Image (tube, rainbow, N blue to C red):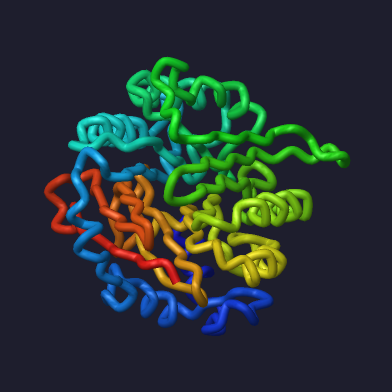
Length: 329
């Protein structure tokens, strides 16, 4: 896993203007310079009138990534117990998140048993009305995930009527299947994309069918900010990142409603910006990469941006509760 970040961070430097990007590449220095969590340069203060919003009216969402839920007989049972503790903490928040997004590598190796373990851990959230939306990573298995997908949504009596949920899992004409979701809300539209290509193959891929679908869906929703998410970083990294990052960026180039792209995969907690699009790499809850933390994130949505609040698995960590404010560009 750490090799993913070393490869990620030593690729060539990205051009500053994302509208001219054909393939997005980084140096380690440019990546860290763009991370406000290391340097504070990208953080933008959210207007005070937004921060003064009444807590009960706050538009709060939760995010977790790279849980790697395993069989109970595995050598890494702490993956399961950490995520279980995270779910307990999420449900104990003063303002309960409206939904929980999982950014892939939800299980360790894609077995049916592991997905049933995942479902059991998530059950208290589902029963409380906090529905779950999941992207798929390189350790996931699409068919085994689909077998539990409908059980991740809240019961009808607990559904939030202000959220419109659209799912696309039908095969395209060539037989390809991707798990895609759109969550429409008052302030923004969330797009859950699928970068999973083959199980245990680190490199991800959207594919032409999914990109064509994304173009059509974005073009129908120009009036609100769009937040896109998938498991892999949207950069050109041989055998570890997103294989079709260049056509993906061509989709985003002229669609100014796209404000942010969220991903996991590297187990790092960093953020930067490519042109006008914020890039947020979410931390893992399973195992820690060097120089970063284990944890999950609360997102508060405002009319003109977001606040990200890090919640570390170790509540005594000095970074627990740190905020990053990102304003839409």
